[in-house]
Image (tube, rainbow, N blue to C red; front, side):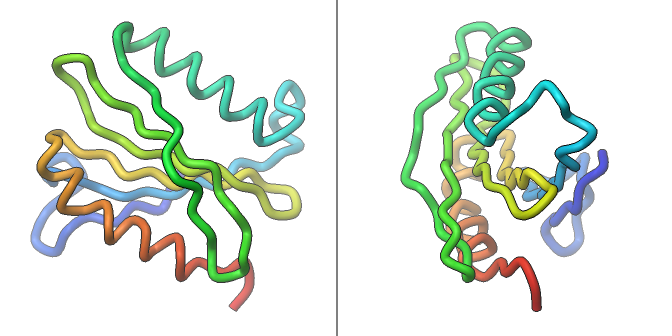
Length: 126
């Protein structure tokens, strides 16, 4: 997947009700994406192309321990599909994407506070 993935103790990525993962995308490998805003729009388009009827709602921005503000969006399925929140940021030569993904709305609700705490504690450098 090219990401760091967190799953509940005793579970696996495929079996967990909810997972959190983080990707760092190397900007020079993405010449068509010139900004975080362009990355967000590209991501939203890909989601909507693959899951017609999905609702995308901007949610509260989340700040890292360094004070960087990440724009966040909820991806809500129309009927079936994963409940997700995706938060976008950047540092130096990388775009950052933090994701919580749950098979159920209940699992999403139970895990969102863990996701927010992870972002709040994230620092670019130790």
